[in-house]
Image (tube, rainbow, N blue to C red):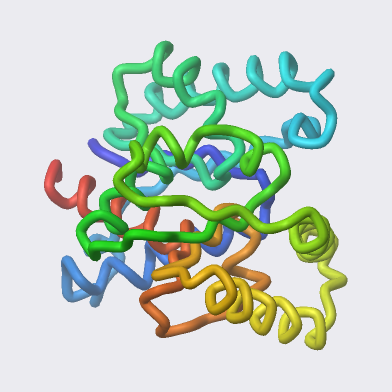
Length: 230
């Protein structure tokens, strides 16, 4: 038995989208004609307290995710992912309690950026991720990272919470796409990382390879690892 394990619920919409992407992406590996062609997927929608905005909840969230990580191993998962960028701050603690490897979104993004030869990328994310060194450590100075100014960062956070609350207007989605384009032009960027798993939902579908969708990149990594192991 083997399965893809996902720690989700941060937020639920992004986790559901990742599941959808995994189903669609299976067509690259099998005929996807019958149920048995698809991978077994264990998606835990973990209702963690909002540790991203409230640091006092970090300890509770950490313990919940540690407990669910153990459940993924018991369920027979052979590769795990976290459907949240900010929660990767807890990845060392989660990996320490399981023999099942977690794929790191920042590392997957770094591999793709370096392979593409990107010299300057923009990072759009929650304030906690922007303040962290998650992506700096993954890119290891090979690729320069540009962060948004305070005004744009505040707008991004509002878009994320509106997406979580299902109240983001079409006009706001369009405004975000325009703001991302302007950010790329003003900073002369090779690509932009949608470094919160809600942001691909805000941005919408695109064929632009210079928009690095962290949900899609995680999906690609999980499927590659799963089918290599199966």
